[in-house]
Image (cartoon, rainbow, N blue to C red):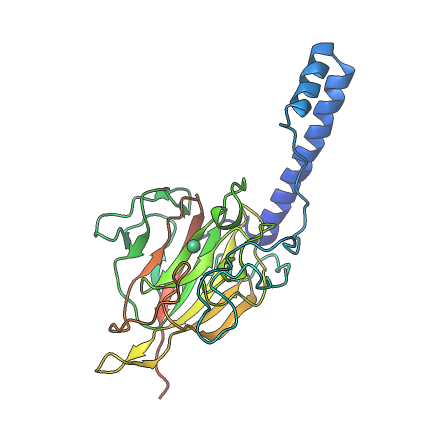
Length: 308
Ligand code: MG
Protein backbone atom coordinates (compact mmCIF):
# COMPACT_ATOMS: atom_id res chain seq x y z
CA UNK A 1 0.00 0.00 0.00
CA UNK A 2 2.83 2.36 0.85
CA UNK A 3 5.94 2.82 -1.22
CA UNK A 4 9.28 1.63 0.02
CA UNK A 5 10.11 5.11 1.31
CA UNK A 6 9.10 4.61 4.91
CA UNK A 7 11.01 4.47 8.15
CA UNK A 8 14.70 4.19 7.44
CA UNK A 9 14.36 5.40 3.86
CA UNK A 10 12.44 8.45 4.98
CA UNK A 11 14.98 9.18 7.70
CA UNK A 12 17.75 8.93 5.15
CA UNK A 13 15.94 11.31 2.83
CA UNK A 14 15.37 13.80 5.61
CA UNK A 15 18.96 13.52 6.77
CA UNK A 16 20.04 14.13 3.19
CA UNK A 17 17.75 17.17 3.03
CA UNK A 18 19.27 18.64 6.22
CA UNK A 19 22.73 17.99 4.90
CA UNK A 20 21.93 19.69 1.63
CA UNK A 21 20.43 22.83 3.14
CA UNK A 22 23.25 23.09 5.66
CA UNK A 23 25.80 22.84 2.91
CA UNK A 24 23.84 25.29 0.80
CA UNK A 25 23.93 27.92 3.56
CA UNK A 26 27.69 27.76 3.78
CA UNK A 27 27.97 27.79 0.03
CA UNK A 28 25.81 30.91 -0.21
CA UNK A 29 27.84 32.76 2.37
CA UNK A 30 31.06 31.74 0.67
CA UNK A 31 29.75 32.81 -2.71
CA UNK A 32 28.60 36.22 -1.52
CA UNK A 33 31.86 37.08 0.22
CA UNK A 34 33.99 36.07 -2.75
CA UNK A 35 31.90 37.56 -5.55
CA UNK A 36 30.13 40.87 -6.09
CA UNK A 37 30.28 43.44 -3.30
CA UNK A 38 26.54 44.01 -3.51
CA UNK A 39 25.92 40.35 -2.69
CA UNK A 40 28.18 40.61 0.35
CA UNK A 41 26.28 43.71 1.47
CA UNK A 42 22.96 41.95 1.07
CA UNK A 43 24.20 39.00 3.09
CA UNK A 44 25.45 41.25 5.90
CA UNK A 45 22.23 43.25 6.04
CA UNK A 46 20.24 40.04 6.19
CA UNK A 47 22.13 39.07 9.30
CA UNK A 48 21.78 42.56 10.76
CA UNK A 49 18.04 42.42 10.17
CA UNK A 50 17.88 39.30 12.29
CA UNK A 51 16.59 37.11 9.47
CA UNK A 52 19.46 34.67 9.73
CA UNK A 53 18.71 31.83 12.11
CA UNK A 54 20.96 28.91 12.92
CA UNK A 55 19.75 25.43 12.11
CA UNK A 56 18.16 23.43 14.91
CA UNK A 57 20.19 20.58 16.39
CA UNK A 58 19.78 17.32 14.49
CA UNK A 59 19.06 15.11 17.50
CA UNK A 60 16.21 15.22 20.02
CA UNK A 61 16.83 17.24 23.13
CA UNK A 62 15.44 16.62 26.58
CA UNK A 63 13.07 19.57 26.23
CA UNK A 64 14.76 21.17 29.20
CA UNK A 65 14.40 24.73 30.33
CA UNK A 66 11.74 26.49 32.34
CA UNK A 67 8.44 24.72 32.75
CA UNK A 68 5.56 25.63 30.50
CA UNK A 69 2.02 25.41 31.76
CA UNK A 70 -0.25 26.50 34.57
CA UNK A 71 -0.08 26.94 38.34
CA UNK A 72 -3.65 27.85 39.25
CA UNK A 73 -5.64 25.07 37.58
CA UNK A 74 -7.45 22.45 39.68
CA UNK A 75 -5.56 19.49 41.11
CA UNK A 76 -6.23 16.30 39.17
CA UNK A 77 -8.35 13.82 41.15
CA UNK A 78 -6.11 11.20 42.74
CA UNK A 79 -2.90 12.96 41.77
CA UNK A 80 -0.64 15.56 43.34
CA UNK A 81 -0.33 17.62 40.15
CA UNK A 82 -2.51 20.35 38.78
CA UNK A 83 -4.00 20.08 35.30
CA UNK A 84 -1.24 21.13 32.86
CA UNK A 85 1.07 21.70 35.84
CA UNK A 86 4.09 23.69 34.72
CA UNK A 87 6.27 21.96 37.29
CA UNK A 88 5.35 18.39 36.36
CA UNK A 89 8.44 16.65 34.93
CA UNK A 90 8.39 15.81 31.24
CA UNK A 91 9.11 12.21 30.24
CA UNK A 92 12.53 11.18 28.93
CA UNK A 93 13.26 11.45 25.23
CA UNK A 94 13.71 8.08 23.55
CA UNK A 95 14.95 7.77 19.99
CA UNK A 96 12.60 5.22 18.41
CA UNK A 97 13.56 2.61 15.87
CA UNK A 98 13.37 3.71 12.27
CA UNK A 99 9.97 2.04 11.90
CA UNK A 100 7.61 -0.10 13.94
CA UNK A 101 4.07 -0.55 12.66
CA UNK A 102 4.55 2.11 9.98
CA UNK A 103 2.57 1.10 6.93
CA UNK A 104 1.07 -1.89 8.76
CA UNK A 105 -1.57 -3.53 6.54
CA UNK A 106 -4.95 -3.97 8.24
CA UNK A 107 -5.97 -7.45 9.40
CA UNK A 108 -9.01 -9.06 7.80
CA UNK A 109 -11.48 -8.08 10.52
CA UNK A 110 -10.47 -4.43 10.68
CA UNK A 111 -12.55 -1.50 9.52
CA UNK A 112 -10.34 0.65 7.33
CA UNK A 113 -11.01 4.28 8.20
CA UNK A 114 -8.49 5.69 5.74
CA UNK A 115 -6.75 3.54 3.17
CA UNK A 116 -5.10 6.32 1.22
CA UNK A 117 -7.84 7.57 -1.09
CA UNK A 118 -10.82 9.29 0.49
CA UNK A 119 -12.51 10.45 3.66
CA UNK A 120 -15.80 8.67 3.02
CA UNK A 121 -15.68 7.09 6.50
CA UNK A 122 -15.42 10.54 8.11
CA UNK A 123 -17.78 13.46 8.65
CA UNK A 124 -18.15 16.75 10.48
CA UNK A 125 -20.11 16.80 13.74
CA UNK A 126 -23.20 17.86 11.79
CA UNK A 127 -22.91 14.88 9.42
CA UNK A 128 -21.59 16.85 6.44
CA UNK A 129 -18.64 15.38 4.49
CA UNK A 130 -15.21 15.75 6.10
CA UNK A 131 -13.59 18.80 4.44
CA UNK A 132 -9.97 17.98 5.25
CA UNK A 133 -7.48 17.72 2.38
CA UNK A 134 -6.73 14.33 0.83
CA UNK A 135 -3.37 14.15 -0.89
CA UNK A 136 -1.20 11.32 -2.17
CA UNK A 137 -1.88 8.50 0.29
CA UNK A 138 -2.52 10.76 3.25
CA UNK A 139 -4.77 13.57 4.35
CA UNK A 140 -4.16 16.68 6.37
CA UNK A 141 -6.04 19.07 8.59
CA UNK A 142 -7.74 21.93 6.78
CA UNK A 143 -7.44 24.54 9.54
CA UNK A 144 -10.60 26.13 10.89
CA UNK A 145 -12.88 23.54 9.29
CA UNK A 146 -13.36 21.83 12.69
CA UNK A 147 -12.78 18.31 13.94
CA UNK A 148 -13.75 15.31 11.88
CA UNK A 149 -15.26 12.11 13.27
CA UNK A 150 -16.00 8.61 12.04
CA UNK A 151 -19.45 8.01 10.64
CA UNK A 152 -19.51 4.70 12.50
CA UNK A 153 -19.57 4.20 16.26
CA UNK A 154 -17.28 1.81 18.10
CA UNK A 155 -17.10 0.35 21.58
CA UNK A 156 -13.85 -0.97 23.03
CA UNK A 157 -11.36 -0.98 20.18
CA UNK A 158 -7.85 -1.32 18.85
CA UNK A 159 -6.79 1.58 16.60
CA UNK A 160 -3.86 1.91 14.25
CA UNK A 161 -3.10 5.40 12.95
CA UNK A 162 -0.10 7.24 11.56
CA UNK A 163 0.57 10.95 11.73
CA UNK A 164 3.20 13.50 10.77
CA UNK A 165 3.50 16.98 12.22
CA UNK A 166 4.30 19.82 9.77
CA UNK A 167 7.75 19.51 8.21
CA UNK A 168 8.43 23.19 8.87
CA UNK A 169 7.85 23.63 12.63
CA UNK A 170 5.79 26.68 13.43
CA UNK A 171 4.63 27.86 16.83
CA UNK A 172 5.59 26.74 20.30
CA UNK A 173 4.20 24.56 23.07
CA UNK A 174 0.59 23.59 22.27
CA UNK A 175 0.71 25.63 19.08
CA UNK A 176 3.07 23.31 17.23
CA UNK A 177 1.67 20.36 15.27
CA UNK A 178 -1.29 20.01 17.63
CA UNK A 179 -4.09 17.61 16.81
CA UNK A 180 -5.49 14.70 18.75
CA UNK A 181 -7.21 11.34 18.61
CA UNK A 182 -10.47 11.43 20.53
CA UNK A 183 -12.42 8.39 21.60
CA UNK A 184 -16.13 8.86 22.18
CA UNK A 185 -15.69 12.65 21.97
CA UNK A 186 -14.28 12.92 25.48
CA UNK A 187 -10.99 11.05 25.73
CA UNK A 188 -7.99 12.49 23.90
CA UNK A 189 -4.65 10.93 23.12
CA UNK A 190 -2.60 13.99 22.25
CA UNK A 191 -0.96 14.53 18.89
CA UNK A 192 1.73 17.22 19.06
CA UNK A 193 5.14 18.07 17.67
CA UNK A 194 7.05 17.35 20.89
CA UNK A 195 10.40 17.29 19.10
CA UNK A 196 12.46 20.01 20.73
CA UNK A 197 9.24 21.67 21.81
CA UNK A 198 8.63 22.12 25.52
CA UNK A 199 5.06 22.10 26.74
CA UNK A 200 3.30 20.95 29.88
CA UNK A 201 3.87 17.26 30.56
CA UNK A 202 0.23 16.23 30.42
CA UNK A 203 -0.16 17.94 27.06
CA UNK A 204 2.72 16.57 25.06
CA UNK A 205 2.50 13.91 22.40
CA UNK A 206 1.01 10.70 23.78
CA UNK A 207 -0.46 12.39 26.84
CA UNK A 208 -3.90 11.42 28.05
CA UNK A 209 -4.60 15.10 27.80
CA UNK A 210 -4.67 16.92 31.11
CA UNK A 211 -4.38 13.71 33.12
CA UNK A 212 -1.36 11.54 32.42
CA UNK A 213 1.92 12.43 30.72
CA UNK A 214 3.26 9.50 28.69
CA UNK A 215 6.07 7.33 30.03
CA UNK A 216 8.43 8.43 27.26
CA UNK A 217 8.82 10.84 24.38
CA UNK A 218 9.70 8.84 21.26
CA UNK A 219 8.26 11.28 18.74
CA UNK A 220 9.90 11.59 15.36
CA UNK A 221 10.97 14.89 13.90
CA UNK A 222 8.75 17.32 12.01
CA UNK A 223 7.45 15.86 8.77
CA UNK A 224 8.33 12.26 9.67
CA UNK A 225 5.66 9.60 10.07
CA UNK A 226 4.81 8.33 13.55
CA UNK A 227 2.76 5.21 14.24
CA UNK A 228 0.16 4.98 16.98
CA UNK A 229 -1.24 1.67 18.19
CA UNK A 230 -3.91 2.31 20.77
CA UNK A 231 -6.27 0.13 22.80
CA UNK A 232 -9.27 1.97 24.19
CA UNK A 233 -11.59 0.46 26.77
CA UNK A 234 -14.67 2.59 27.24
CA UNK A 235 -16.01 3.40 30.69
CA UNK A 236 -19.07 1.50 31.85
CA UNK A 237 -22.08 2.79 33.70
CA UNK A 238 -24.81 0.94 35.57
CA UNK A 239 -28.54 1.34 34.98
CA UNK A 240 -28.60 4.29 37.36
CA UNK A 241 -25.87 6.05 35.39
CA UNK A 242 -23.21 5.45 38.03
CA UNK A 243 -19.68 4.66 36.87
CA UNK A 244 -19.13 0.90 37.19
CA UNK A 245 -15.74 0.73 35.47
CA UNK A 246 -13.48 3.58 34.33
CA UNK A 247 -12.07 3.90 30.85
CA UNK A 248 -8.54 2.73 30.06
CA UNK A 249 -6.00 3.56 27.39
CA UNK A 250 -3.00 1.58 26.26
CA UNK A 251 -0.81 3.51 23.83
CA UNK A 252 2.28 2.61 21.82
CA UNK A 253 4.00 5.34 19.80
CA UNK A 254 6.66 4.27 17.31
CA UNK A 255 7.09 0.97 19.17
CA UNK A 256 7.52 2.62 22.57
CA UNK A 257 4.99 2.08 25.35
CA UNK A 258 3.36 5.34 26.38
CA UNK A 259 0.58 4.02 28.62
CA UNK A 260 -0.09 0.54 29.94
CA UNK A 261 -3.86 0.26 30.49
CA UNK A 262 -3.85 3.62 32.22
CA UNK A 263 -7.05 4.57 33.97
CA UNK A 264 -8.86 7.67 32.82
CA UNK A 265 -10.42 9.64 35.66
CA UNK A 266 -12.94 11.39 33.45
CA UNK A 267 -13.09 13.33 30.20
CA UNK A 268 -9.80 14.93 29.10
CA UNK A 269 -10.63 18.61 29.03
CA UNK A 270 -8.51 21.76 28.89
CA UNK A 271 -7.76 23.18 32.36
CA UNK A 272 -10.55 21.09 33.88
CA UNK A 273 -11.09 17.89 35.83
CA UNK A 274 -14.64 17.09 34.85
CA UNK A 275 -16.35 13.95 36.14
CA UNK A 276 -17.53 11.15 33.90
CA UNK A 277 -20.93 11.57 32.35
CA UNK A 278 -22.89 8.41 31.64
CA UNK A 279 -23.44 7.12 28.10
CA UNK A 280 -23.88 3.79 26.39
CA UNK A 281 -20.11 3.11 26.10
CA UNK A 282 -20.15 3.38 22.34
CA UNK A 283 -19.07 6.39 20.30
CA UNK A 284 -17.12 7.85 17.43
CA UNK A 285 -13.42 8.38 16.93
CA UNK A 286 -12.48 11.94 16.03
CA UNK A 287 -9.44 13.89 14.95
CA UNK A 288 -8.80 17.40 16.18
CA UNK A 289 -8.52 20.56 14.12
CA UNK A 290 -6.24 22.64 16.32
CA UNK A 291 -5.25 24.92 13.44
CA UNK A 292 -2.04 23.07 12.57
CA UNK A 293 -1.60 21.19 9.30
CA UNK A 294 -0.91 17.76 10.75
CA UNK A 295 -1.11 14.78 8.41
CA UNK A 296 -2.64 11.32 8.83
CA UNK A 297 -2.50 8.04 6.94
CA UNK A 298 -3.22 4.33 7.28
CA UNK A 299 -6.01 4.32 9.86
CA UNK A 300 -7.83 1.15 10.81
CA UNK A 301 -9.76 -0.09 13.80
CA UNK A 302 -10.86 -3.43 15.26
CA UNK A 303 -13.46 -4.07 17.86
CA UNK A 304 -12.16 -5.94 20.91
CA UNK A 305 -13.65 -9.40 21.39
CA UNK A 306 -14.47 -11.18 24.63
CA UNK A 307 -12.58 -14.03 26.27
CA UNK A 308 -14.59 -17.22 26.60
MG1 MG B 1 -4.73 18.12 20.82
